Length: 189
Image 1 (cartoon, rainbow, N blue to C red):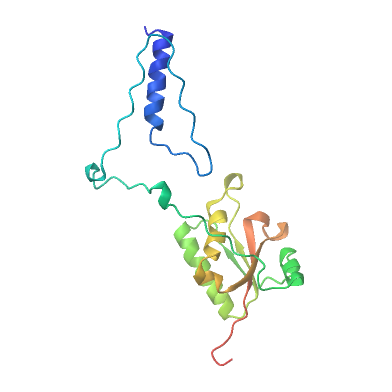
Image 2 (tube, helix red, strand yellow; image 1 turned 45 degrees about the vertical axis):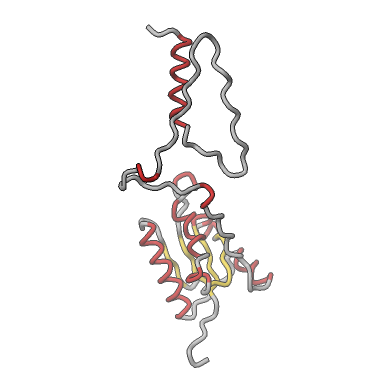
């Protein structure tokens, strides 16, 4: 049977091996080093250095270097280009909803394509206010609920939009968005 001190030391060594490649989140300080081990036990061996990139197998996925991560893009300015009264009407759900898109049950790829087609067709049809239903997801953290605002911020979709706002509870609440589309300018106008 192992002695408690020996078991604790082995556990500590296992923990250090498990977290040796973990980097702190941006804006946080480095963790303090562990206190030296107590007792007559030998110190933990230093973790081995990572293998050079050439030693990695081709099937191993490459991890992005922390310095190469991109800062998130700022969200769509939800009310740029419209006056305060129009923004209030949109937030209160007072614009008539001319079309709806329900993304429930779609994969991210299917939902992204459906959203792009829906926004483009709705604008071409002269619609002004449409409703996109993402769903809330389990415990309020739905994948599509988080992805749709990012997709709306992409240049191909953003050019069709004047504003967006979370829907009122009667129209889906936090699991849906109102989109106010730009007026369609026909080729002859």
